[in-house]
Image (tube, rainbow, N blue to C red):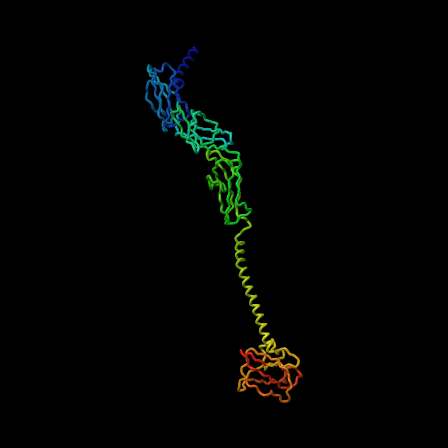
Amino acid sequence: MTKVLGFILVMNALLCCRHAEGAILTIDPNWSTFHPGESVTFICDMNEGKDTDWEYEIKKNGEQFLRSNPYKSFTLLPIQIDHSDEYQCCGLRKSSGDTKCSDTVSLTVTAQPKPTLTAGPTTIPVGGSVTLSCSLPSAGWKYKWYIRTKNTPEVQLTDEENRDINVAQAGIYRCLGMRGNENYQSLVSDEVSITISFSNKVVVTRQPNWPQMFSGESITLTCEVQGGETTDWTCEWRRDGKTVKMGNDKHLTVNVNESSSEEYMCQCRRRDDWHSLTKWSEKIPVSVSVTVSTPVSSSSDVLMIIGPVGGILLVLLLVLLWYYRRSKDLRCRWWKLLKISCGVNNGFNKNDTNESSSPLHGDDHIYESVNFSDSSGNVADKPRDATYSLIELKNFGKESIPNEPVEGAVYYRLESGMKGRGRPGAKEEAVYSEINSGPENNNTI
């Protein structure tokens, strides 16, 4: 009795819960993610009786999505973004009207994907190779590979459909993905350039090769590929990491200024194979010499001006000095001819009593100021410059007078006995001096 009761309970559980265990919903292809334009097939399996014993329907998020029909498979084409949801299939038994449903299955639809193309080193040596990888986020993909160069159009690598490929040819590569019997394609990947590096050393030469450069000068840099003299090259010049020139000319002319403090380097490519190139040369510094500055240049300009001017002033000074000495010598010679001392005292006059103001004193000589008088005997105004005569004392007797007067002569009486005048102890005798008027106010004694 107990065994019969247990059997009845098991059968009842199976009958009540058979929809959760019996019906199965699968999708084909079984991908985690679909994209717009692709197709998906729902397959509903009741796992009981024949397929023709049932009517099938597909529910989306608990609501009818595909109505009942006698076919267990349903194809959704094309898929749209809004088809992403939870799906379930249910079967209606034709003979009894019993219904059972499957568990839910998720369907994810995203935008058309773009593959990611990666490479190991993008520069390889001559004879080397590199691995390229094209990846998409979901499964089921095959790949197409394309290559082009500067001088050739893009072509497909027909023997490559794998995700990863190994290449030894320089060029520009792209890839895309295909799935669903190649009916659906992804977007095309970004480009990756693979270059082949030559082992030839690149050297930059300077012309002129001066150790110091000054502001305003220019220098020509030349990019030389050692061992590649017979190959046609295209050269690229960089200054402080930025490209400043690219072309078939291997020379670069640099104008140096006060703010110049830069480093230059170059690299060359084969003209017939743009992706076959050399390594970069060493950096060559180009700058103004630290010993040159604006103040030094200004001082040089000042010296260039002061030098000639100073020379001219010195010559003028020497000429003036020569003229002064020559004038003095000529005056002294003229005075000596007149028997007049070259010593001149502008401040001595007849009324002075200070001996120190007199001209040089000598034995038996009297130095006296000579005044001019007109025909009436009045003393004329004394000239600004007094002329002193050297007069020798002569004894003419007690009342010495000159011989017969000479017509046109002027006589002046000199008294030697005045206090403080003449030589001390000299006799107080009158001395007459004959003064003749000479040309240009020169008086001859």
